[in-house]
Image (cartoon, rainbow, N blue to C red; front, side, top):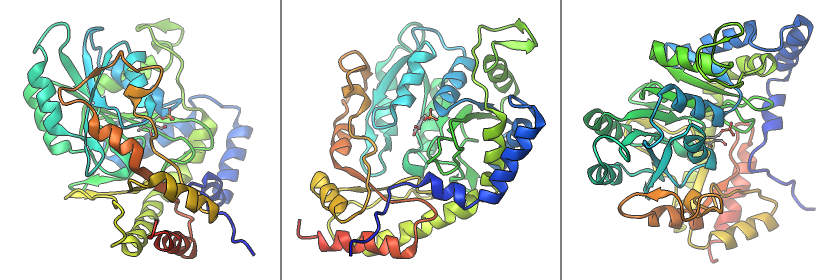
Amino acid sequence: MSEAFIPQADPRASYLAERAAIDAAMARVLASGRYILGPETQAFEQEFAAYIGARHCVGVASGTEALVLALAALQLAPDDYVATVSHTAVATVAAIELAGAKPLLVDIDPATCTLDAAELARALAAAPKTGPGRIAAVIPVHLYGLAADLDRILELARRHGLRVIEDCAQSHGALLDGRRLGGFGDIAAFSFYPTKNLGALGDGGAVVSKDDALAARVKELREYGWRERYVSHLPGMNSRLDELQAAILRPKLRRLDADNARRQEIAGAYDEGLRGLGLGLPARRRGATHVFHQYVLRSAKRDQLRAALTTRGIGTNIHYPVPVHLQPAYRGRIAVGPSGLAHSERAAKEVLSLPMFPQLTDEQAERVVAALRALNSL
Ligand SMILES: Cc1ncc(COP(=O)(O)O)c(C=O)c1O
C-alpha cells in the first residue's frame, strides 16, 4: 500500500488546528455588519504591535503592498536606489518599482542566503553619496525565517544615512538578541499569505514601525491618503486589511510562538537525521532564533532529489527557482552590485524546501529523513 502524500505546506491544517476560534471569529464579523477597518482590525493591529514590540501596526491588503506603502511613506526620490537581494520572492523587488524607486540587487552570503553586508558596503562605496543614483534605503529580507545580518546592515545604514525596511514576510516571531524582527529598522513589512508562519485565510499584510510620523503616513496611504474621511492629504491607494482576515489572525497570533516552537522541533529532527549525507543544511546565526518558515537544503543534485522525493509521496518546493534579475520582467534592466550575483544564481539551482508546517507529525518528518537517507547514493 502506498503511503499518504506529505505536502510541503498545509494551510488547511493550520485552519483546522484553530477551527473553533476561527469559525466563531468569522461568525462574529459576519453578524457585525462591519467588514472593513472595524474593531477586529484595530484589535489585531494593537495585538501585533505589542507582540513585535513596536509602537505601531497598520493592517494592509498584502505583504507586497506592505512593502510598497512602507517605501512610499519614506518619500524617496525617483532616482533613489533601494538595495536588496535577488534571491527572494519577486514581491520584494517589485515593490521597489511600484513605489517609484529603483532596485539595486546585491549578492547573498551563501551560508545564510541573506544579503551580504560586505557587498552592500562595496555598493555604497561605488555609488554617489548624494543626488541622483544614491542608495537611499536597504531592504534586508529575513529569508526562510532567519534574521539577515542586521548588526552590520544597521551599522552601514547609520554611517551612510540609509533607511532600513525589514522584509519580515517569512520571519513572524523570529528573534535577534532577544528582540523580535520587525523592530530593528525604520519600518517593517509582514505578509499574512496563508502558508506564512502567521497566515490569514486569504491575503493580508501589515506595516510595523516605531516611528509615529511614518506609521501615520502609511495609515493615510492605505486609504486614499485620507486623514479625515473623503479628504486626501496624500495621493494614496486602497490597501486595507479586511475585518474577516483580522479576526482570523487574532487566534492565530496567540498560537504563533507554539507553532514556531514546533517548526524548530521539526527542523531539529531534520538536522539530526540528515547530518553526514553531504547535503547543505540550514545555517543558524549567532544570537538569532530561526523560525523555519522554510527548511531549505542545498544540493548540486537538487532536481534528482526532488524527483525521487516526489515519487515517494513527499512534496517539496523551490524557493526560488529563478533569481529576480533573471526573470523576464527584470532581465537586463536592473542594477546589480559590484561583484555580480553569482551566489544568488547558484542558490537558485541548489535550494530545496522540505515539508515544513506545525502540524507535520514526527512520523511524517521521519519518513522525509528516511527517504533522503535512502537516496544518499544518488
Ligand atoms: C520575502 C517576501 N516578501 C514579500 C512577500 C509578498 O507577500 P504577499 O504574497 O502577501 O504579497 C512574500 C510572500 O510571498 C515574501 O516571501
